[in-house]
Amino acid sequence: MPTEPSSENSFPNPATPSADDHYWYGARSRKQFSLFVAGALCVSLSVFSTRRALLRRHHATVPLFYQQSNAPPRQPFSLQKEAVEALRIATVNVLSITFMLGAGGLWASDTWGKQELKEKLAKMRRERQVKGGRDEVKDKQAEQEFEDFLGPSLIKRKEEEKGEKER
Image (cartoon, rainbow, N blue to C red; front, side, top):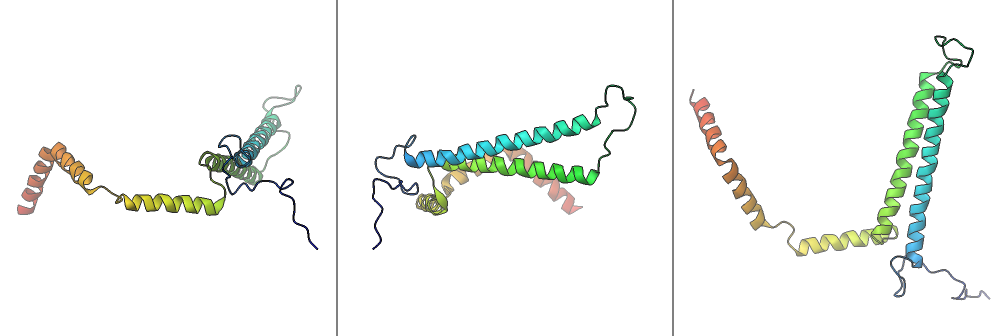
């Protein structure tokens, strides 16, 4: 007969915030912050990898102590390999920064998972629709202010266009 795990040994589900779960140091926040820290670790590793590749490339071009300074590099380099390595490094840098920023954004907005993000976005959309979306009175006022500001030049332009049509 299967036994139910005791509630004392089970971990809290980070997807459901509890009433006693504090925003900054609760279990849910720690889980979200751990993803941010993992992203920061990925960024630091990608920076280390980039720095190592740049130093390796620099050291390949520096001549030895007793070598002539106008001699070609010791190791000939391939432009294709350089391009592939640059693309790999750039991709890793962009992905790690995106991971860190995404996890930080989810932590800052107290969102966990795709379903909760969809619910928050749907709630924001409903609130915007309830408010009426765009304020037409303000739009008309702004349009009137714009016309007042550019009125003389618009009238002048219309007169020029009429003059060109008559010719």
